Image 1 (cartoon, rainbow, N blue to C red):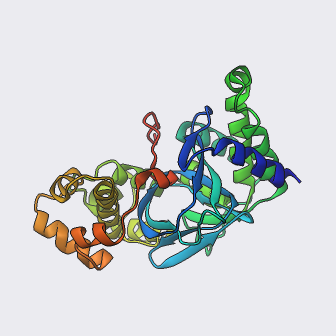
Image 2: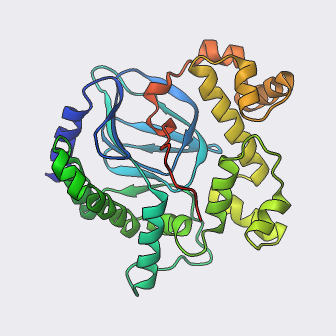
Image 3: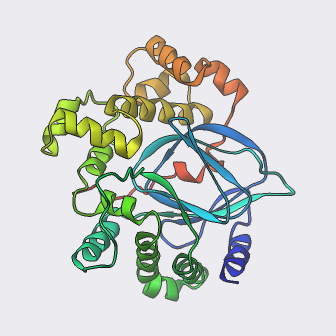
Length: 310
């Protein structure tokens, strides 16, 4: 019953094609009525909940397909491919995305970790991906419904908005993706801090030794833990972040040279070679064959005021 009421709220809020602001900080609804093949995107720390239709995300060849039965949790910035291959006017994709505020999530994760027995610690053998799916349990459904109910009432949003976002975050921490989120925002979040640093220094020549030193790890340990979290080596991650960001800029109208320079490439020919190696087409061929309007990708939106890890 709660999920049906959430769907009704989202249908009323997603009144146009693409992304719609709700008036609640970091909370957006989206509606897509056309089939879009999986294409480069960058997921910021976000929860994406689908109420109608189906969405896909691909990370290093691993495809995550999710609908109203599971929500997607991305706990750190990640270069992925995303699409809505089954969306249509008759069967639109409808959903809501909730940005994870770093400061609030860190405070909450640390509070949870100091309270005994609320969330189990990960086993050494567990492989916790920073991109995961979790079931819509009662805690998550109730928290999301209470959050979306605030829309349209400025006074309620001003007074209750932060508390209800915190309630939703707590529901995520208690859910199936909770261990991954706790690793990103709680004690021992060294890899998450490194990912945040890499994602915000695409123009710089950052070395693995530099990153490992910053978090007090040996190069070998850092490399292993980084790959556990992202399924990529640090070098692969940096390259994917650069190329995905550039691809999104090209899709939104920027020319190839400008896009390449904006993510740290000094040679357009080198950029084109690496782009073709990753996507199978030159930037020009890719643009002509797989255009992707940025307005249809809720996960490419970033909070300008997003605090950095500290």
